[in-house]
Image 1 (cartoon, one colour):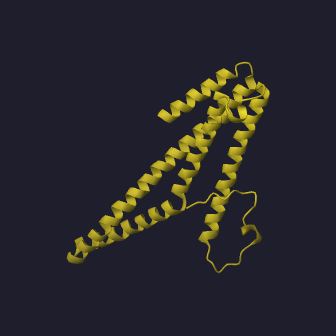
Image 2 (cartoon, helix red, strand yellow):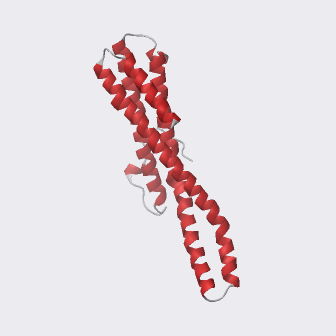
Image 3 (cartoon, rainbow, N blue to C red):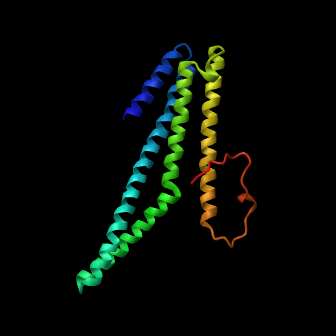
Length: 193
């Protein structure tokens, strides 16, 4: 909630700074502000999913051996129920662990970084620092819009590139590599864990 209020206050302050430029106000409100809020919401949802998956792995990893031990000592219906529960829970733990490894943590990290970079650009514009310290309003706005679009493009490219890497890793190693599998020199290397 605090982050959302902070973003809304910054958006409002930026819109007020550009009161004589309605196109800049619209961009601040709907392009920049909307993107920062979207990144914030997606980041928080991914963070919640990450924490839930971690808890499932931890709880499942501790309960499965107990269920197996109880099933080994029990007889009849109790043994069957505990064995089925152990298998089902171990499958859930495996799915949660693979989701943690492959996507959830990376998605959270990606959108958390996107939110931080967009918000940083907004604060720099508001404080007239960095690229926005000099020049008239039109130059500062053009530099800000270019920076925001550059950030968004880099993250869209990085996200697509990461999905492609996950797809390549998921394929068996015996398959021939296609020309599209070569890394693009235009795509930043995000050093994903």
